[in-house]
Image (cartoon, rainbow, N blue to C red; front, side, top):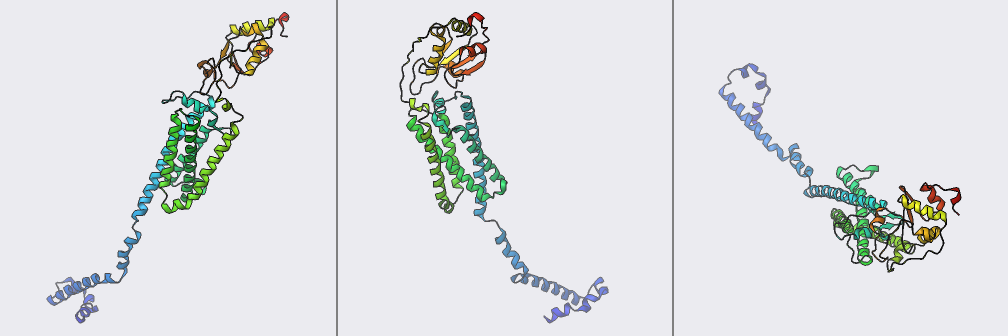
Length: 372
């Protein structure tokens, strides 16, 4: 240590001329010893100094493997929700269009059974078309998946609340799909509906994918909430269908009506006969059903002779029973009720007065041939 102090003494560093020339051998040895001692000193310092904190920092700042796995799993979950939600949105948007336009559904499996389910009372919940409700639900799930994936939630919602909202949506959709599968098997026995099965598959897939993103402790924490949501959905559907059944045509589901004709007893006036001939000449059509009382009243207004001249289209010529469908001519006309008149491209619903039919058909009323 004494030699180390002598080496580092001020006279050694103050002699610049000595450093510029070749140093004596003893100085060279001391300089070499100084470098070795200084380097040794630097190597020993890590045992207690700032470098000790440097060695301990990597474990503290290194990302946890479990956190990285959870982050990757969350992103994957959100992407799956966005993708499957988008598929469900497209399917229900198509069914909503069919429902609102009263069009027949293309059913790749099961023939026309898809249309039977879509046109039934069970395709409406509290007056709202069921496909429209599904379209909104799938759209919400897809939007939440995209927002959570991009970490950009609206209205100041954080990721935790966003995940909880996504779980609530998929839980309600799975509960509704389970209920609809039960109704399909009991109320539509022997009927196959490809769109119903696809929607159920998407709903259950979204539910289990979302549930998988939650840990066991979180699932136990929110189990009560999920049960409440599922119970509320099933209760609402039961209430809606219980309200609709008495006032709807579902009461005819178990009736088997054979086709029959009703005799027209009233005589026809000259005006009625002339109007009926005019309507026939311009291709005007009256659509009706054999069991429709308003259709019979319309024929009674024309009278027996004139009614036989009308272009009347019977929509159920083979009778009415469970699963019966209107003939193609009536389905293509997209009827909303009976009777329905189609005159020069205009649609008139319900039974009409002869004067109104004459006006719409542009029938020229002669003074001697006024309607009675």
